[in-house]
Every structure is written in C-alpha cells, then in structure tokens.
Image 1: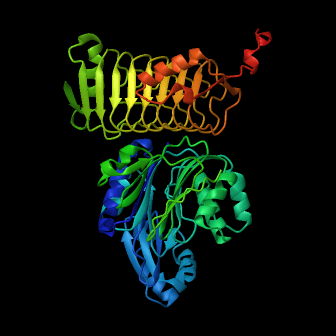
Image 2 (image 1 turned 90 degrees about the horizontal axis):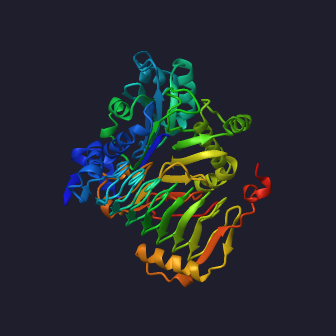
Image 3 (image 1 turned 30 degrees about the horizontal axis):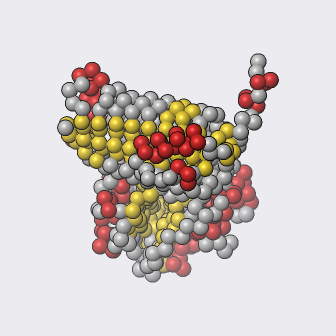
Length: 309
Length: 225
C-alpha cells in the first residue's frame, strides 16, 4: 500500500495552516503504511538564497557548530535552523555547490535531502503522527506540500528510503506502487551521470523526471514520457517550486482521489484524507484518470488533461 | 428510523447492530451519518433493511449484501457492493474502481460514473450506471447484466463468459473475445426492466449489446478433458 496526501493552496490566507492540514491528512492515512513518513513543504522562497535540508543520524554531533564551520570554509554567512534530526541550511544561491562540497568534507555523515529556494523535506522512520511531531510539521506554513506514509516493498526501511525523494532543485516525488524496471533504469541514469542515493524504486522515478527536465522537458512532458519508460504500478504526486502534479499508470489500480475548490487542490489516496478540509462538501471531487497528466501552477488555474497514452 | 452516528459510535458497533437485524428484525429503516469516507460500512447485511448513508464512503461499502437496500447519498470508494448476493445498492454520486465486483445477484445502481473494472468477474449481479464506466469493465464477467448509459473505457468485457453488456454511448475499445451482438426483442425487454429498476429514463433502443464471441480455448468442447 502506502498513503499519499497533497495540498496545493490557491488562497493565500490558508498558508499558515498548510502544515496543520497536511499533518491531519497524513495521519488519517496511517493504516495504509506506517513504517516511515515524510513531508515536503514549499514555503516562500528564502530571501535571495537557497535552502538545503540535511539529515543526520547523530544530530547532536553533526549540527553542533555547523553554521560556524561552514562559514569558515565558505567565507560567507550561513544560517542553520535545527529541527530534530534535520537542519535547514540557508546559503546564497551562488554558494550551493561549495556548500555541498564543504558539507561532504566537514560533516561526512550528513545527508542532503533537498536543495531549493522553496522546498524543505522532513522524513524519518516511524508513524506519521510521530514523524510530524518530531519536526513540528503542524506549525509550518507554505504554499503547497506533499506527504507520504510508507509500507515498504522494494527496499529497506530507512530514513533515506522514506518519501518524498528529491533529485533536483525544488523537485520532489512521492509514489504509491512498485516499479519493476528500476534496476535497469537506475544503471542507465547513473551512466548518464545522475546521482541516485538509494536502491529504492521510487527514487529512480524521481531521478528519471529530473533527468528529463535537465534535458529540456517540462514537468508535464517528463511525466508523459514516464508512461513509456517506467514499468510497474504507480500513482505519483510531484512538487516543484510553484507547481503540483499527479500521474497514475494506465492500469490505475493504486487509488487516488482529488478535490478542488476556489481555495485549494487536494490529493488523497482515499477520500478519508480529505474529509476535514474546509468546504469539502462543496468541492469538485473526482478520481484522476489513468495515464493522464494533471498539473497546477501558482498564479494560473489550468487543469491540463493531455491524455498521454 | 434508527440514526447511527459513525463518528461517535464506531464501525464495529454499526455493523454489529445491522447484522443483529438478521435475527432481531425490530428496526427496518436506518440512517448512518458522518461516514467520512470510512471503510466497510454496512457490510454483510442479511435482512430486508432500508439503510441510507449520508455522505461518501471508503472501501467495500455494502459488500456481501443480502436482501437489504443500501442507499449511499454521496460517492463510494473502491469495491462498493462487492460480492453482493441480493438486494439493492444505490450510489447517488460516483463509484470508484471495481464496483459490484464478483456480485452474485441483486442490483447496483450508480447515478454518476463508475471508474475502472466495474463489474469485474460479476456472477449474476445487475449493474446500472447512469454515467460512464472506466477501463476493463466486466472483465471475466460470468453472468448478469451491465448497463452503461454513458461511455465505456478501454477493453470492455475482456475474456467474458455469459454476462450481457449494454452501452448507450461510445466504447473506447472491446476486450479480447468481446463483440457487439444483435439486439433482439428479448434483450430490449430485459433492458427496459433494468432501466426502470435502475431509475434511468434512457430508451432501450438507444443501446448496443455486447457479449462473448466464445472463441476462446475453453469454449471449444474438443478442448475438454
């Protein structure tokens, strides 16, 4: 199984409540999988900077003096905000590569979960309620977010095996299903120079989309071509800096329900996840069609429904 | 009428109370409020009850139903009326995948659309969908009738046996061994009755009939052991 939730806000007045609403949606999905949980939250771009969300198994060792140590290597101010096993490091956009190199050198046990102007990712082994509480997700605000609760099938139950997976700037993907050609695709992507961290099938899907987009595809095009290149079952929900997309494989046996009002677009593996959203009784509620790319971007209101297969 | 609040009283208490009615028979009319997309609501009923669910349901609502009429005043999640034996299930909104799967009898009415695999492996149930059905509907259907007043998705009736399929709109594609068949007077009569029981005002003459071409290996008597 696995449970997915997503919330894309059109009404800015709801932004302070994004973390609270997503947490409640995700907890409702606990019995679809409870070995690990994670959330990607997109909030107002760091001022002229980039956020790196990093994770450590020994935060008390790795995060101590981190800002100071990074500043010494980079020769520039760095801000570090700790949240349990995670920390958000803010650097100026021209320092990202240097910061990653510095981190690998001075804190080799720290793993980078996401990089981008808006994205932060929090994920750990454990039930959604415990994970959300550790990182105080309920207090977070943002413009859109995606949550996942995992029942592992394809790879180990570890922090790095939890969703969401981020393989490109401000991009993330969560997956319900299983891919059967992920090993060959991983080898192919690695040959093309794509960095893939784990043996997880879903990370390969994320890396595939990132690779496509690096080579000129839009997210919609990348999702469309994944229908030909990914073999297996999937419902994907993806996030970008200002967008939110959904794709189901042509067989579409992994469940998906969506709801849209003037205030938001919401996704849930089941309708149960949506029942407490404001105005849900008046929302347009539907099941996304198989093999059809759905995508929303802030500041516009399109519902592109290109039937891709 | 007995009103049951699912949020405060819980699912097990609800299904226990409804199942008691197969012996007690002291409350015939039930209303279930606050379903909130919950799973397995009103399953395994075996009494001539009239149950209304005020809102949308999750997986397997009214599964294994016998005798009862279950009315969902909302939309239904996957597997609504799965393996129904008799009685009637009405969904005011849409139904998710495999609605009426493996049903042996009774009538399922979906007033909105039904998604993929509607009536998969049906064994005698009648299903009337006012809107469209998704792909692989009536896959391996063995007996009963599937009536689609809108359009049908890809691979309709794949590998089917003796079930009848009636579609008013377009069929994206027919599945293996499924063919269009002549609509004879006896079929129009069956369809008229189904539409009337399914609360649908469509005309039987507007439909096409589909069924098994019986070309598969197992239909050839020479292949019997």
